[in-house]
Amino acid sequence: MKILISFVGLITLWASTLNSGITSKYWIHPSTDKQATIKVLSPKITDNKPEVVLNMVDPKELECMSKNIYFEAAIESTAGKVAVAQVTMNRVRSVHYPNTVCGVITQGKHYASGHPVRDRCQFSWYCDGKHDEPHKGSMWKESQEVAKYVLTTLDLMDITDGATHYHADYIASPRWAHPSRKTVEIDTHIFFNNGKKKARKI
Image 1 (tube, helix red, strand yellow):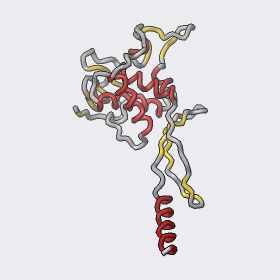
Image 2 (cartoon, one colour; image 1 turned 30 degrees about the vertical axis):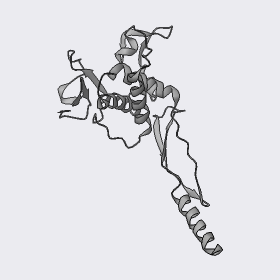
Image 3 (cartoon, helix red, strand yellow; image 1 turned 45 degrees about the vertical axis):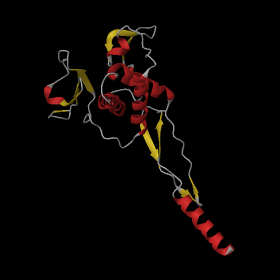
């Protein structure tokens, strides 16, 4: 009987070791001029011990992404919020823009004091002359949740088809908004990507 109990215990321990890990995802803040990336590590078994990988998101990057979602798409659907976040990430991954979320969002002309020049930035809320502190309610919480989801989900399908630009559908089309580059319309935003020709509406 003791042998049977020992055998069952050994099998249970072996099985739990094999299945003890869940894929962990974390944001790696770039330390060089290379583009920022999101890395995913799966647990590796070494000498019957799973590798421990912590789930980490850079707090500053999360704050910047959350604010961008909040001020650009707080009243949009979840898809609309995700789309704004994905445009931000598409720029982070592009060599034509800064390689961090905060760098992308604050890109634009600044005074010597560090304050942005009004209406001369990539995302209008950042340089519209208004305060940049969100109301700490449900829309802010949703924006934070979407931001963390996008930053930690490596295999997330890009619903913008690689868009790096968008504008609201209630304003006149900017000079850069060429019809042949339009990829999709989600809620009140129209998205654009140089490599796409056809548009679809959601």
